[in-house]
Each structure stands twice: as C-alpha cells, then as structure tokens.
Length: 219
Image (cartoon, rainbow, N blue to C red; front, side, top):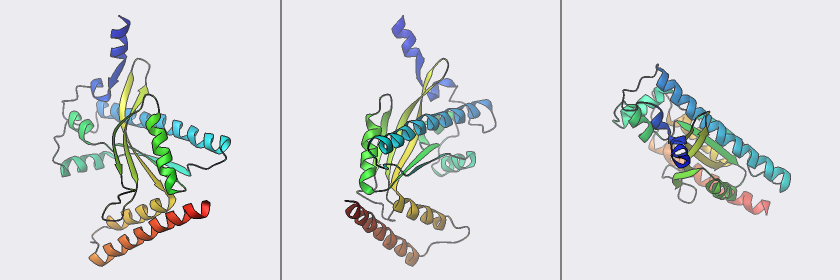
C-alpha cells in the first residue's frame, strides 16, 4: 500500500491535465502549467544561490557571479510551435518545447562552468535529460555556453511534480557576447550581412582567448 501511494505521489507535469486537449493560452490549465514551470525555476534557483553562498563562505571563492531566470512568453511558445510545425496540444508543448523555463548561471572563469555542471549533475532528485557542450565545441556563429536540460522536482501539497528546466552556464565574457549577438540577430527589418557575421565570429574567438587569459592571470 505504501509503495502504491509513493508511486502516485511522484508524477510528471503532463499527468496533471488532459494534455491531449488543444492548447489555450487563456484557460486554467495553461496558467497551472506556467505556475509549475515558475516553481521549478524557484526550486533550482534557491539551490544554486545556496551553492554560490557556500563557495564564498567556506572556500572564499566566487564560483558564481549571478543568476538570471525567465519563463518563455506565451507568444514565443506559439511561434516556436508554429516554426517546428508542432500540433497545438498540451502534450506536444510539454514534450517538444524544452526551454519554457530557463535559468542562466554566469560565472567568472571558463573552468568554473565545468565545476558548476558537475555539481548540478550530482544533486539528488534532479535528473539530467540532455546536455550540450558549446564551450568545448562552440557553434559556427561563435556562440559558447554549456546547456543542461534538467528534470526538477516541484513539491506541492499532494504531489511531487517533475518539470523540465533548461540551464545555460557561461562566463561573464561569453554572456556579454551572446547578449549583443542576440540583439543584433533579431534587429527589426534588418538582415545581418556576411561581413557582419564574420565580425561576430572574430569577436567570439577573441572572447575565448580572453577567457583563457583570465584563467592564467587568476592562477
């Protein structure tokens, strides 16, 4: 009996609703889902803030500079589903849109990225679904960051719900480049020329050299 109760106590986010129904941005189910995504971010952010404070107090080292979070806007969710030609159901949204809940960890040095990544992967109760190392192998555009897709437990009054959260870990220099590149990439009514694209790639390479230089100076 106890085993059955424990099994029912643990569930995925999709079990809370009739997730085959059509996605509606103004109904209660959508609001409930967004609440769960926001709670997953809060759970993870709290853990990371504790990790940040631990390293500062016990090891006198600023492992983490700062953390940013966001919940994807409903319009952005719809646009992404349209681009990928995904059916407008809750099932498809939960299954295919992995960055609804996003958390970014900004750290001082490149080596800190891998320290943080390893620590996150060891946490009890959190499952790693996917990971992509764009630090060792940057994208052609020059983009560099470490991505983790985590399954985070959210404790409610009657259940523990597992919710997907996308985590990006990058240095201050990488974040500076990525933010500027994102703004340029989505300039309204303008296209980036090949020359501009090559300049961004060149700047990304300079950022990588800067990160290596900072490690050497720190040592």
